[in-house]
Amino acid sequence: MDHLLTRIEKLEYHQTLLMKMIRSAGFEFDRLVITHNLGQPEVEEFLIMCEELNKEMLEQKAEKFIFYAPLFVQFKRRLTPKLDHREVIEACLKQRIFPELMDKLKRNIED
Image (cartoon, rainbow, N blue to C red; front, side, top):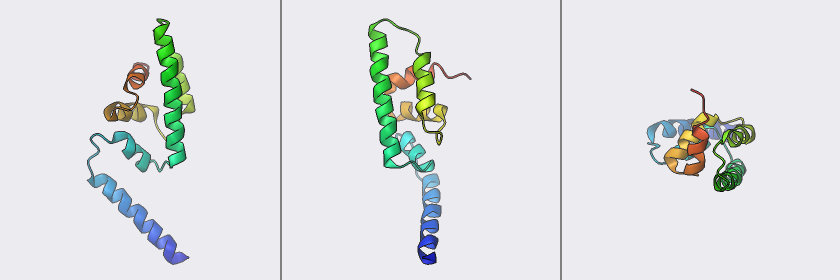
């Protein structure tokens, strides 16, 4: 059992080194997933949340609603605590994941 734990720890260490070596251009969100050790269920939950928020944004846009702060609040509240909302929004924009939604959310980030 100790041998298995040692091997897992070595793999985790090697993964950390590999993450430093590879370029993330175009895969910024995927890099966050790996760096913050998210599992497939957490990523799927995130994508479902974005789909719901995107639908809500499109409905608000059709109704000429121009303030998206409530969507931003929902996004921050529903985002896993493992991730920083600023990093996620930037990564999603760069990787073109829900770009229109992320653009609206980014406008609500306070500098």
